[in-house]
Image (cartoon, rainbow, N blue to C red; front, side, top):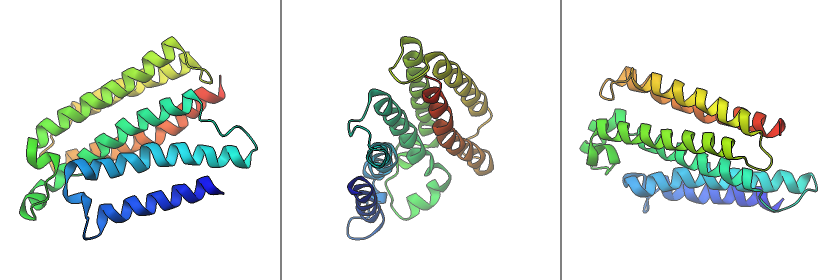
Length: 191
């Protein structure tokens, strides 16, 4: 279908300009992050939703609860994009790759990322309390309150300059990324 084709082509184009010369946008922290959160946040969530809705013969209008998920994943992907560079700050400086960690330092990027994640989780907790059509609000609020607390507990154990400590936390953030689709889908199924 056309939406799956759009997903694949957009991901391919963005991945290409991210990685290959002459663009190689991964050298620039803003553009690298933009590539990552555009594919993971917008392209995959919106166009795969439209693809499956088309297959099921449902509406081709993206409902508010999908936009809420997309915004959350957008923020989470931004943090993943920032955090991926923290362990390799020495290599990035050596090869003159302008990552956010090189500009601000790993400690500031780590704290900024934790604050962005906090804002993302708080937004879903508030959305659960206020209510979103198509989502079980109490389930959304409670699961994300649990994840927010867990994220803060884990972040207190991290030393951004300790590669082992930070790599374990980075893997934890990826776990949160994939768990989001389970928790959010559960809240939608229970609506």
